[in-house]
Length: 471
Image (cartoon, rainbow, N blue to C red):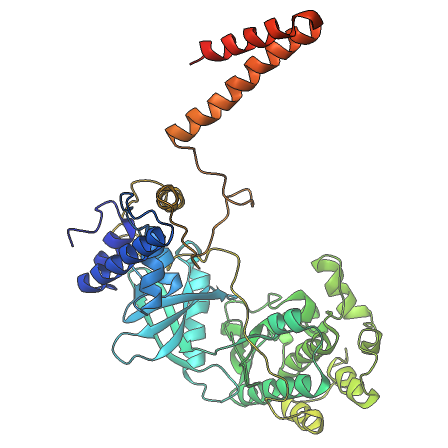
């Protein structure tokens, strides 16, 4: 390992984490050196001294070799060495749920890909911890193809986590934002599957209480699963729920009875929220857009949303009637159960893969690091800012004529703008100063020449002498 520069934060963190073996790192380093030499040779600059590969280039090669994921490389390059929670190795960041962050992970022994949901340390209040443990116990008893299954739970130091199946694809909210209003057949298929999942949960005595597009996951082949039961409560045991008596849910999808009397929530409340979700799916608009939370709650209680055909003129009237029946403000007039919702949507539902979902593009934001125990081994401190080191490495490569095309993410500064230009080398600075000085001298000479037309030659000589005096 002696050939790898000791100042490489990535190399030190990768070895300390155990994710990269010395032989793998040595191989990546040799490949990186070879690529740099090839670039120099192609530019007829082989005589120049070879530059050291940057951490960015090393990371790119380790990713190409499937040794690291992009997320892992990013965290290691920042000096973070703990990328596991118990036996689960973190491979990517999925998103933020109602109760905590969600990461993609793989079990070290079983090799099973899963999702790990963690309760942030800074939110570990007694109530949040109670709710989190409650979610773990609730999900442990669920086994339905239309609900996200729970596999495991554990604690790593002071970090509590829940392990569930990993659903590839994206949530319904992102799907609609990406593709716009969905066709009736696809919308009916997704909501029908969600209704079947809710029907199963209701039969187990559970109420979701936060049904919304963000909590319905859709795979690339059109399979749908309801997720995030962290806000659910036992229908028969609501008084033991730490959130009982509070308005729980998302304002755009709350049922009127959840707003009026949070203690009197029933399975039919999920039907209203699912109706609002179907409205959003075919219109790409929430039922009551605009305004603050209080105004939204008031409109759920008192107003009627715009007719869906205002946003989707081709919707069949019979299909619109299903949405209206799901969104009845009076629970007694609403579709009574999720099974009936599924039955009424079934004639409209196409096959699950009728319209490909596709995959979400790469996020422009830097993902957060995995949660770490406060007493865990400290991360390797970079000797200088990682981004500056990356830029400096590429700057050295450019000095030797190398142009590296990298897929490594180009991060932005806190101001939201691209990273500023690199500081110029000493030789380049001298060249710039030479040009600036020459310009000043010539300007003085030209000014004299204009002021004394007969003495143009004298003015030019004076300008030349001033220019020489600065050297």
